[in-house]
Amino acid sequence: MSEKISRRNFLRTATLGAAAAGLLAGCGNSAASGSTAASTAAGTYTAGTYSATATGINTATPVTVTMTFSADAITDVQIDVANETKGYGADIADEMVKKILDAQSSEVDGHSGATITSGAIKKAAESCINQSQGRGRGPHRGQQGRDRGARRPDHRGSGVLCGGAGRHHPGRDQGL
Image 1 (spheres, rainbow, N blue to C red):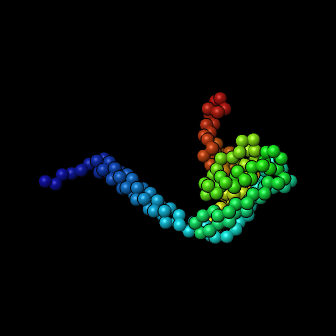
Image 2: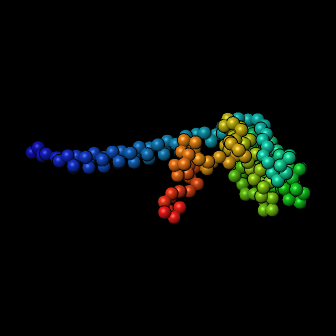
Image 3: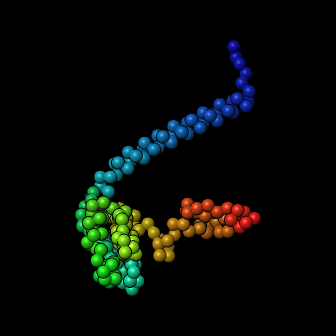
């Protein structure tokens, strides 16, 4: 009754078993991370007042955002855009305060016609949120906060674009 199993069948079965175990483990981690996210939702912020600046249309004087947090909510937002262009950026502070408070996030729609000032407000608000969560001054580091798609120094000239900004096909892109 003992049946010999070929090496090929053994490896095939072992590979399928390992793949199935990996899928199940991935599902388990997903559920665990979901419960972790739910448990950290309460007490998301360190209560206090935080300020940050970002460059708007007026490069000489930055936009300043000051946000007050309780342990689980953004409770107040103050935006100083006094030096932005009158009739455009200088007039959107109240609208942006309402949007940020309603969304409880810096991920809000900007104001048409004041795109640069809106972006500066959102960037400074994001920095305040990160400070209140103990993540430093903001997610953007490097020259003018634009390093998300930057090449890593150890991949210089390799044709690999780090940061998920697209694909690079050396042969196809150069007409070879």
